[in-house]
Length: 310
Image 1 (cartoon, rainbow, N blue to C red):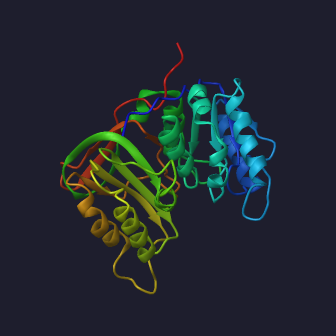
Image 2: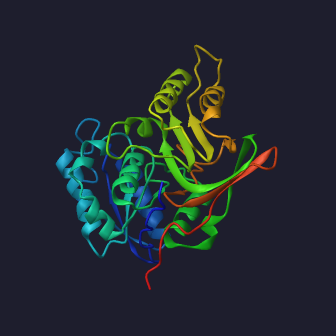
Image 3: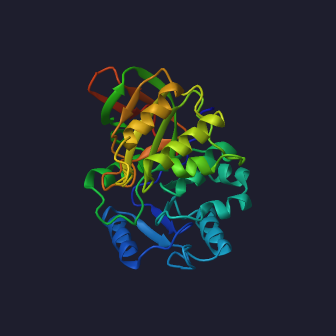
C-alpha cells in the first residue's frame, strides 16, 4: 500500500461543514455537536439535508451525495465531518470522481459507516482521512475531542501514542488502514476494497456477536485480505459478546482468526471505536505499533494527519 496524500489542515477558527451521508441524526445530538465545535473556536456550516430522514437514511441518495459534494467543493469550508454513521454511504460512492477529490485535498472526518468512504478516498483518490468522533455521541470524552481537533489542525500533540493490552509482542511500522470491521468486509469485490499488505490494520465494531465477527474475518482471509499485515491494533468491540454462547469471547475469536495474519505485534482494547473515548486516527499514513512491553503497548502516528498551507 502506498502512502496517501495528506489533506489540507483545518485552520484554527476555520469552518467545518457537517453533512449526513448515511443515517439520520437526532436534532438534539446535532445541536450538541455544533455547540461543541463552536466552543472549540470553529465556524460550523450544515448541509441543506443534514436533518433529512427517509427511513434508515438521512434523505435520498442524491440529496446526501450532493450535500457531501457541496461541502467538499466549497473553498470556504476547510473540513467535512459526518454527523453520524449508520448506513448509506456505499449507495452513492460510485458517483464520485476520485480525481476531483484528490485535487480538492479536503479533510474528511468520521467513523462507523464513514469507513467505506475512507477506504474509497485511499484506494481511489490516494487521499488520507481521519477516523474519529462524529456529532452523534453527546458523551464524547474531553480527551477524544481535544485529540480530534489537534489532529485536524496538524498539532504535534495529536501524534501522542494511545495504549492497549499486548496479546502478541513485537514492533511494527507501516501505513495505518482499517476502521469498522463490518464496513471493511462490505468493501470486498469493489474498486475500493481494503489493501492491508505491509500495513498496521486497525479494527473496531459494534453489536456484532462473536460468530458474526468470526464470519467476517474468515471472509477477509479467504479473499486474501489478511496476508502480509505488519501488525494489528484492535479497538473497542461494543456489545459484541454473546449471551447465548458466552464462549468463545469476541477477543478469543479475534485472536484465533487474526493470529496467522501477521508475525508482528497484536494489541487489543485500544481507545477507539463506538465509545465515548474515541481517539482519532489517520487512515493511510505512517504509524508505529509497539508491543515490546509484555503488558501495555502503544499505537502512535509517525506523521501529521494533515498538511498545513504555506
